[in-house]
Image (cartoon, rainbow, N blue to C red):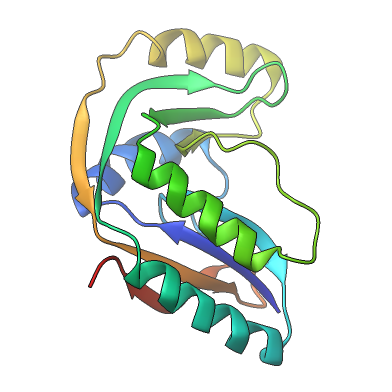
Length: 170
């Protein structure tokens, strides 16, 4: 089964992201707006039990932190993906590092972490250029406290749903 680990932001921030996603993101029906902490990975039932124990320990020994969205950016030319950029908070970076170290302990490490919420993807080059010019001019300022993360699994119809939620701190 395929799993992933994410942060779901507040409803207010999800509504804001979805105002763009409904126009620019064909994956809007598969998963709500989120910050990916661990990229999708395959796991067996036995492995996921071990991973969940590790996730409980990581959550217990991690503190809530502030998620601060500050502007719209793009991964172009690597990918025609537009996103809400998130400031790299020390606790967020530590959480990401700990989660990936435990999930991928015997596997390949993931690429560098760029915390973000995708608002547009799979756009043609002209479409991307037109939209990114407008969106990067927007004034974006949102801050909220994150006190949990979620282990998700993918259903047969490609939608993602929560398997378990982990609260940060003691």
